[in-house]
Amino acid sequence: MLFWLLLQAATQAPAPATISGKVTSAQTGAPIIHAQIWAEPDGHSGELKRAVTDTDGKYEIPGVEPGA
Image 1 (cartoon, helix red, strand yellow):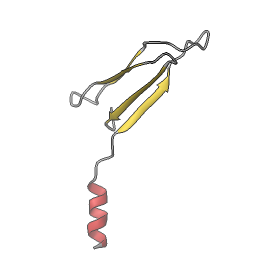
Image 2 (cartoon, rainbow, N blue to C red):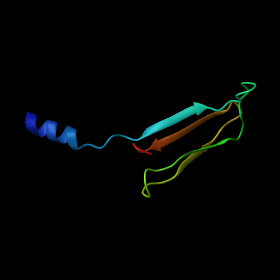
Image 3 (tube, rainbow, N blue to C red):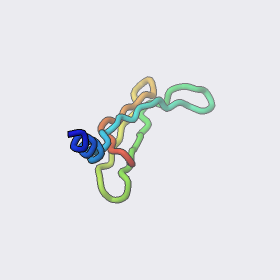
Image 4 (cartoon, rainbow, N blue to C red):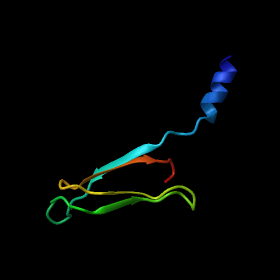
């Protein structure tokens, strides 16, 4: 039974993650509104994920596969 549990744990793919952050001006520290953020897939497989910053310069890209 222990072998089966270890085998199953080893074969599970890492879960998708969420990338989040804030974009600000290097000169003033003010938030950058409507900046486009992209997470490109590794290689030619996968889906291009993107987000646009809000009025506070914050963004969130959910469902990013490991290695993207």
